[in-house]
Image (cartoon, rainbow, N blue to C red; front, side, top):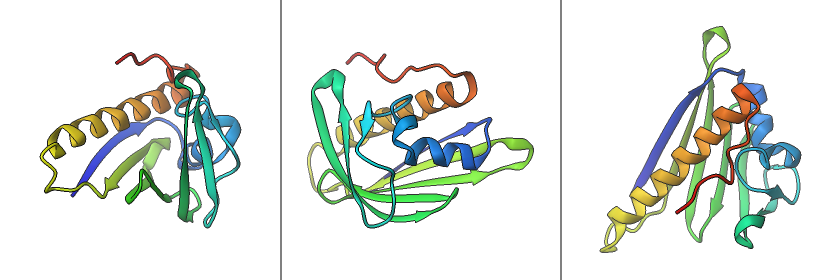
Length: 140
């Protein structure tokens, strides 16, 4: 079972790709910090300083300016696809797989997951298009 979220951003694909893989940029829209540049085969530590939380992801595949695939949260596989469109816009698609459809809470897990990805994409759009940092504004 998987979850797909996507958003159009008015920036070229190579700039959006760099926002994810560059530790200096990811803190402007998603995690507060990344331990290193994302590259295939690496395990990267991501931190949320506001929540005193951190986790690791294992980068499975990188296709420069096009795709990032990683594992996190146990057996969840995330594929970020970056599709350049005409006139400088880009569609960013995030698919997360690994949800247990036999779990009685799977629907609430999928909804919570969708909320998280849409929020991340919204923060990415704000950062890329307007230079706004919305990253730590969500209150649950």
